Length: 227
Image (cartoon, rainbow, N blue to C red; front, side, top):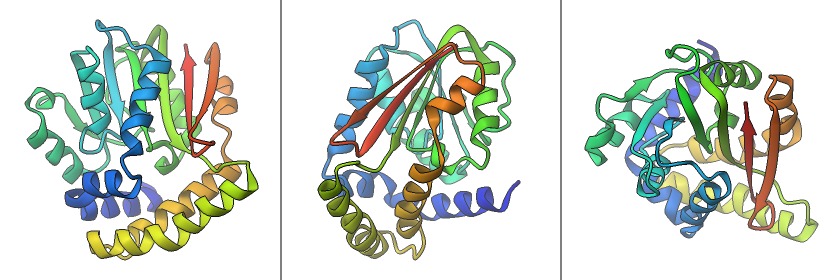
């Protein structure tokens, strides 16, 4: 396992107990809207067989289940996150797996849908992960990625960057007690925005169509790729 994966796993294991609260608090609750909007855009059918990758404590999977999908599996690198997911939701027990996105323990064409909420930037090899997504998706299946981005408007970008780099790490550190997690977040988003073209990677991995939508002044992107 790469050094990045070891660091990411250790970090998320450490903050797992405060993760849900901090997500909602630091986003002022807008994260609920982002998840709901992503689901409205991708339109997952009730009979889907869905894998939520980087599922964490299950917020996105719970929103998907509330929308009518029953056959949901969860995968995450962090054991502590998966444990909390199981405590929150009986229905996910027996359908969780601790794994990396770059090497998924499923046979070809298992799932009709894959979702990833705020997890792709933590992958150590995004093209390899997307290659795995393509492998385990059924023909016509879809991947829906919800991820941070940086606004292009200079004023909004400046305010957002100040909050992300100056305010968020301080609050996150006080509440979670972790010195690195909420410094890692803004740094990872900035690096991701500069270096990663999700649409381009999906197309290189042979996905037939890719669509991108920006939410909340470009703070978040929803990328939907179909096999």
